Structure formats: C-alpha cells, structure tokens
Amino acid sequence: MTNPKEKQREYNRRFREKHKDQFMSASGVYGKEYIREAVARFRANNPEQNRFTNRMNKAKRRARLNNARVEKYIKKTNITNWGLGICGICGESLEGDYHIDHIIPLSGGGEHSASNLQLAHPICNRQKFTAIIIISRDDRTASNAGR
Ligand SMILES: [Zn+2]
Image 1 (cartoon, rainbow, N blue to C red):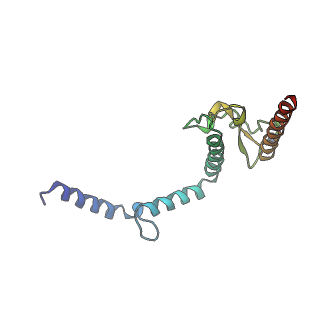
Image 2: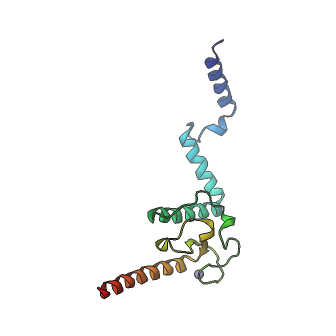
Image 3: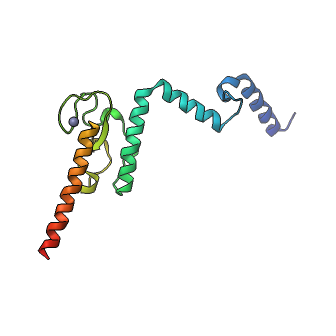
C-alpha cells in the first residue's frame, strides 16, 4: 500500500470503525442523519438554549423580511435586559416564555443587533406590534386626508 490516497482511505476507514458510536446514527447511517439526530438530542437535553435559538431565529427572520441590518452572531448575554428577569416593555417580572423584541421597531428602521434587542412577554410584544400597525395606519390616513 504505497499509494498515499489509498493509505488515507484505509486510515479513515479504521478511524470510523474505531469511533463508530460517534459517527453513526441509531439506525446505523453515517452523515446527515447522524447530525440530525445529534441536533435533536442536543435540543432535548438543552430546552433553555433551544428556546432561545427558536426565539432568536424568529426575530432574525422578521428582521430579514423588513430588510433590516442583521448582526450575525449575537450573544444572548449582550441582549440589553438578559438575565434581569424583567420584561423590557412593561417592566414586570418575566417568567417562562418570552419573545425577543426589537426595541426600535424594524418598521421604524431598527436593526437586528444586540443593543436593539430585549426580552419581553409574548403578550407585550404582540400588543406593541399591533400598536405600531395602528399608528402607521393612522399616519397613512392622516397624510391621505391632507391631500
Ligand atoms: Zn411585559
């Protein structure tokens, strides 16, 4: 076995064999499926982190839809009221579920960055969103009336 490629292949084969449990899924498949299972396992074992990732992805998706500038890597500890346990909108105690709210609304030119993010009650977040829609609708009506 002088061919270096062959040698590498043989080495890889032995490596996979040796670390089987780490590369193979429960159903005995390598690769993609294994990764999917590993992610599912991580999520099940880390519900708090999973919730944060879900909420953050939702906020990020909203930002993209609004063509806002999106900061790529946001540490949760950099979010303005992270760890305080207080809703950023009503100021009351925040327990259980939360939404990630854009302090300066995306529709008002706010960006998706740590300094513009806060944790808020889902209900406060929704009320704020509704209020923004009503205000912008009123603005439109007012400017139309002026014409
Ligand atoms: Zn609140």
